Image 1: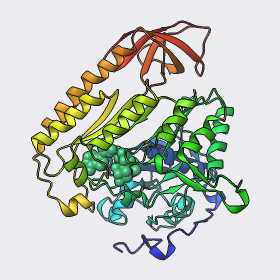
Image 2: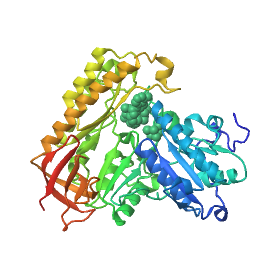
Image 3: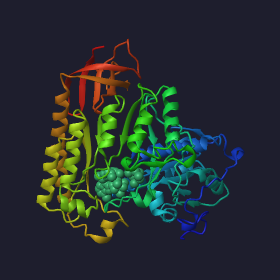
Image 4: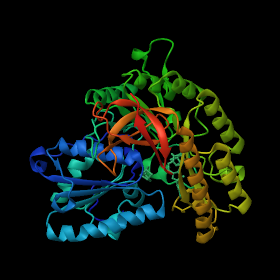
Length: 478
Ligand code: SAH
Ligand code: SF4
Ligand code: F3S
């Protein structure tokens, strides 16, 4: 323990899994302004909505201007070195606001908080509170500690916390699309990845609380939910004896999808992230069966080479991945597929990099998120392998992957020209309020002229007329 003023012992095994029900004093906290900024994956953004809910419940109000906030939170990501650097730069910008506003509390939440724990307080003098992803219920209490002059840390990970009972307060919402966390943590140990360390053990959330949240969103006018987990295919919930209806005791991800799809045919369902080792044909059949489960799968490949995949500890090889792609194409022929790719992983040769390019040619992804390998402290790869691919080679390979993906994205969009698409109107186009924008089933962004017969939140049939490298351009036909 590096700081004398830590309020809770970090990562104390004996307390893991213990529910923290710590009541902050509503009187003391009410009327204060909360500003929260989020980085990283969709799960982090969803968590910020949990944090807002916990504090609004204590009387806080939100603000979109950090300079006028009483409490400034930054919900952080550790996935790559540059993600952490962005947060540190941002914290510097908060310094002058804090010096002008005595009493302002600056807090670091999320994965970087979990990774660095109390070290954060030493490294960044302006930070008052450091809170890991499983400790948000403790926030009111921690804020009170800071009020009393104590810098505070709670980075306890839990085996049970899913925040199932907390209704997220939707932040920066378009009122049409929302995220629902269905599980937390990750039990895979991909050798490059920091997530198992920052998010702890995998646990699934009660399916009935998920369906209830989807239903409430639908009642509030939302028309699309994205179910979130690091590996949604390993979602698993065992019904207790009392709920047991004899033949079905376990809710799998396929079953959960069907339960959410049954909320209303007008509610679209998306999900992320699927893991190639775990995605089952059962899930694909559920998707094929339900019109409102979107035909779109994010299936990160990471590398197209089996030796590299083994070093990455992804637990599938090239042939397995290709088999899963073939299963998707045969069960859901029109499915959109996107991926994640890492270039320049430890010891990756030029030939092995070519295997990544060739698997991209095989799949022709609709979209991809592409990264140069960034070594993360504490991961298996950092311990076992040398980060031996020079930065300029990682970058050059990344450029090749990006160039290829650009061609494929364009190819996939061109395929959609001349066809009709069911599009959910999400809002007005960024470029012009004379155009609407929304996504088709395959998750392609579609832009089309406003038609006064239809409003945001309606489904429309759009004919694809043209495309740019990233957007389909169309026209409503009914
Ligand atoms: N759970 C998801 C991935 C979550 S992290 C899955 O298993 O696919 C999102 C993406 O960040 C990963 O898919 C990977 O492509 C990338 N990533 C993770 N760690 C990285 C690292 N150390 N360097 C570069 N990219 C990384
Ligand atoms: Fe990280 Fe692998 Fe878990 Fe994804 S599945 S979060 S890449 S450890
Ligand atoms: Fe980043 Fe944590 Fe998500 S490391 S990608 S915010 S789970």
